[in-house]
Length: 193
Image (cartoon, rainbow, N blue to C red; front, side, top):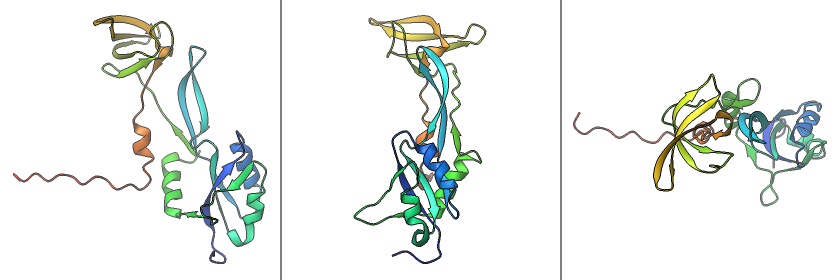
């Protein structure tokens, strides 16, 4: 089943909205290490941009422990719903994957998405009369906290200014950053060289 004396990483399902409680209770157990990856990003809340920090994998966290010794203590820790299993078996996570995730997150176990508004960016409008419509940023006006955008409206292009707080920025870096150990696509060789 499990090798004796070896500490392995496992995925845990937390009770709803109790990932941090689960992490804290696991950290109080001797011989148990807990990892709760967090993400910080800007989002719209009631028409204003606010910075939010929440679990990167909502409802899940990771723990490293010796299963023959700590399985029941981890399974019944406060905030833990269950240890994830498939077909009645508890799959463990390779240490290299956990190390890679920690390397990405840094010492605070936190991934921060910095969202900068730059000319030429394709964005969506998150609130107001143009809510949900895509646009292209023409200029960021930091003194006024406004953005000049270009959008298609009723078959013609319209340039207007909107509050920076309602601009929803896409961030395509996250899937690339979290491709844990995914191999790079092969580079095409130039036959002419």
